[in-house]
Amino acid sequence: MVATLPQRARAAAAPAAARRRRSPWAVLRENAVWVVAVLALVYLLLPNLVVVLFSFNKPNGRFNYTWQRFSLDAWLHPCAAPGMCESLGLSLKIGVAATLASTLLGTMIAFALARYRFRGRTGSNLLIFLPMATPEVVMGSSLLTLFVSMGIPLGRTTILIAHIMFCLSYVVVTVKARIAGLDPALEQAAADLYATEWQTFRRITLPLVAPGIAAGALLAFSLSFDDYIITNFNASNSSITFPMYVWGAAARGTPVQINVIGTAMFVLAVLAVALGQLAGRRRAR
Amino acid sequence: MPYFLLLPGLLWLGVFFVVPMVFLLSQSLQTGTLETGYQLTFHFATYSDAMAQFFRQFLRSFEYAFLATVLALLIGYPLAYAIALKSGRWKPVLLVMVVAPFFTSFLLRTLAWQTILNSDGLVMKFFRGTHLIQLTTALGWTNGSQLLSSPLAVVTGLTYNFLPFMVLPLFASLDRLDPRLLEAAGDLYASPLSAFRRVTLPMSMPGVVAGTLLTFIPAAGDYINSRLLGNPNTAMIGQTIEGYFLRINDYPTAAALSFVLMFTILVLVSVYVRKSGTEELV
Image (cartoon, rainbow over all chains, first blue to last red; front, side):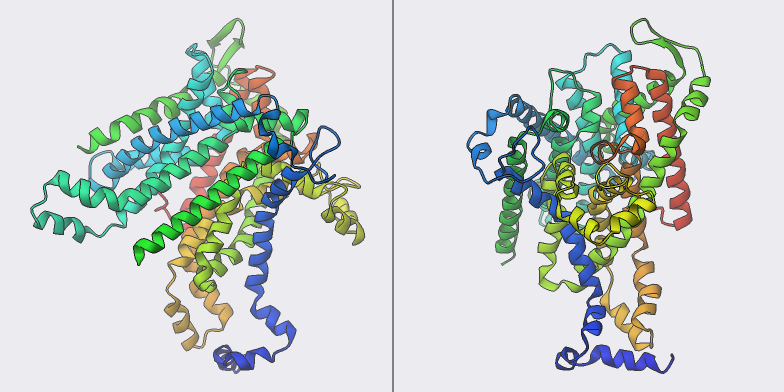
């Protein structure tokens, strides 16, 4: 056993030409990590593929679960599913409002936690952490008991309140990480060049932290737009969000249009990420 | 200055996160009905009744969440390892592929599993062709002739839904690993396996702890997967809580269940975090 250790070390350092001649079993063992990784990626992405594929389906019955034949119907008439586009509009509105509010509040907290030492810091950190460590069903149901006990009617306002609450912590964590990674020398240099505190913040700190704020905002929007459990506890029959619509459709019959929306969001998000990467690369050059 | 920055956000969390928890606790100790109103009577029997009635759902929730967490760790670790240490210039592309599922609503993706696993699907054909279906049925993971509406489908869905939450923290800690440490281990005659066991794994522990927590906590409270992919015998506790709040309107029972769920998770998490020795999660 001991004698084989240096041998193995040498084998690992062998040139690629020598490696190519090894048995298929050895090749497989060497790439075992990649085999599992690729299978994991298939597992992760297969449902997305199904969603895209089935947006071009023409199902026979009410449910869009088995492939029948190719059709562009749903893409040509995306709002033909009754109530769907209204629910989509509501989700977008709530998503934007929750993103703006939670990004503003969260960024302020992140600056306070990253830049100051003060009494109650540990407690504040705990209060930020707890919503992320609480199951959604508990947060949703506890908010429901609050609203019902106080006699506050459920609807879009209560949904928005809940969304700001659960997005806040994620924004704080994202922005805080970005501030902590800043090089303090840059701000010191600004101060050496007679910049006031406000000028330093506007022209140095904020632009450097901006990618973190953008990431936090994107995270907040996707959390808000996709939330079902908490929303369902704090919504009424007249405030149906898109996830609530999909949930209802799962019981009544799934219109192909929900797959069209899922596919369109997916394509838009991938495009946004690709553009962001390109812009980042150009700036780096 | 820091207090001025903190106040609005923390006030929001105080009023809409902490205060509701107090209301939830109070609600669980009240008696009455939604129509006639509730009175705080410190009726602790609600807890024992609710636990006696729904102990199986509780146990099942933690069992499924545990299975999903272990599976996600086994699947997610090699993926995170490959991306962090072996992918070279493909790293950004692979990372986007890990987050890409989030770009489509998770309900739609969970419904897609109904398509993937249904009786006419390829997966089912494979299970039937290889007689794997008989094995999984004998083990109690599936019931008879189908993959859907079974514990297997629910755990598959849970693992799938929370896998990115496992991969991302694992990636973050593996990405920080200095490759020179592994070279040093090799120079000191460590086999690749013992280098992994003595260097890579300990260095990635913060990621393992964060990933398992981010998977286990939401999985234990989830009921989407058990509703869409399971059957009445795979019901998890979240489903009971939702039903008792929104359909049966028995608020005290639902509040008691909700409170026990949160309390159990908090205890499990704090024991786990203390045992694993990484308390700098926040």
